[in-house]
Image 1 (spheres, rainbow, N blue to C red):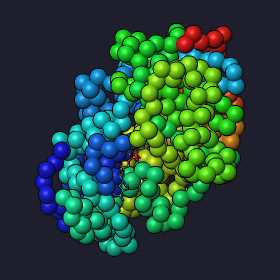
Image 2 (image 1 turned 135 degrees about the vertical axis):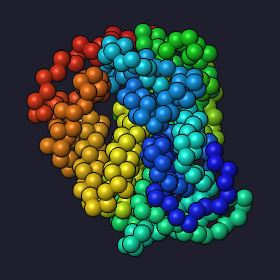
Image 3 (image 1 turned 30 degrees about the vertical axis):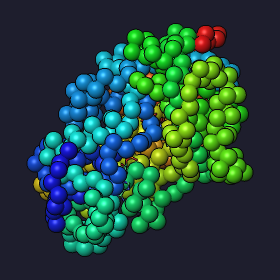
Amino acid sequence: MSTEHDIPRRCDVLVIGGGPAGASVAALLARQGIVVVVLEKALHPRPQVGESLIPHVWKYAELTGAAPLIEQQGFVAKAGGITVWNDKIHRIAFADFGFARPALHVERDIFDELLLKHAATQGARVFQQVSARDVRLELEQPEVCYLDRRGGASAEGTIRCRFVIDASGSAALLAGQFKSKRLIDSRMRFLSLWGRFKNSRFVGADGRGYPAGDVKKVRPVTFVTSFEDGWIWHIAMREVASIGLVINTDKARAMDKTRREHYFLRTLAAAPYMNQLLAEAEYLPDSFSQRPDYSYYSSRLCGENFYCIGDAAAFVDPIYSHGVLNAFYNASIVALAIAESLQNPAQRARHAQLCENRIRQFYGFSRSLALGEFGGDGVDEELVCRFMRQVPRVELELMLAAAFMSERSENFHRLARNAGLNLRPTQARAHAMESLLL
Ligand SMILES: Cc1cc2nc3c(=O)[nH]c(=O)nc-3n(C[C@H](O)[C@H](O)[C@H](O)COP(=O)(O)OP(=O)(O)OC[C@H]3O[C@@H](n4cnc5c(N)ncnc54)[C@H](O)[C@@H]3O)c2cc1C
């Protein structure tokens, strides 16, 4: 990572946040010789949730040039997914869909640091422990005020740039400034609680349980089970398993904050199958974390001198592992728009509008998928249908099969039909199973 100390006073593009969205857009722009500065509040490796990656991410990792580094890391390759949803068991195997490369379970601290280091090797100037505080977009050249906390100091400064990219994740700095962050209606407002476990058994694609140590020999699946208040995930990684649950915020409201960890552990202990996986496992109490109050989107995403990407743009229920994919996708189109706009400033407004539509399309797509029958609410269906027509068939079929597994398929299938897509029947690919042998 860059060891330079002095933060420049000017650059072409200032990226706020060095997560997957910020690191990817920085790498893509810097590779073209554009002067990019990334300000990252934390010091990587920093903890992050969201360890399940679907195979679609590889094409974006190829674009940024990070793919070989990800391969070399030796992350766990996963075979597919198994869900126990309202007592019905379904399985999908990525092998059935013909993806050339595996899906992954990644330690996000390692994965995110790898991406940020890669951005630096591509020429981006990365400054960690420096947080953006305020963005002035009304100036001829936008100005970002920052707080530099490196070496225990606390110094303020400003940078001028031509474009600001907000990739600050759920902090959504610009949406906060614009007051444009919209929480989706209360039925879809969630709280997540999660933690790490050592020595947890995991589920293989055959529906059998395996000891933690076998994760390098037997490919795990991402295992998801519903319970009366929401759903639970189990993601086996090299040394630990990430396990968490998602419940409606209304359910959580009645719960004293200090009782949430207790609720989390009690729920896992009572959940069929999950309790078997955890019978011999050791809970790591320091790993307990939570994320309140999502799903949301920002009603203002792109303008002539700013772009909001990744979680800073929108975030919905993470059930289909679309978060990192969304970050990568947003980064790829915004990098294109900015590179074009630097060449041809007269087209800035047009490029911003095109990007805004694309980001909304993807958001609507994820939302219709993840939020099932509620997906039509507030989503521009025509935009989603247009997007669906452009998604490679193999990716769309995987999503349709996945939607079927959690009984959220109705809305998503309807949109696919409206888009005029004649897809192969997906039930055959989300195999029903009688039971699991854990
Ligand atoms: C419970 C849960 C489970 C999830 N599961 C999955 C999953 O299995 N698969 C998946 O793909 N996605 C998952 N996600 C979503 C995924 O974690 C996010 O979508 C992804 O991290 C978004 O990347 P990002 O770069 O936009 O934001 P982030 O990863 O949040 O990165 C933003 C960065 O900005 C920095 N920052 C914030 N404010 C400032 C500031 N003012 N100045 C400078 N830097 C700043 C932060 O320190 C951070 O490093 C899950 C999310 C949740 C909540």
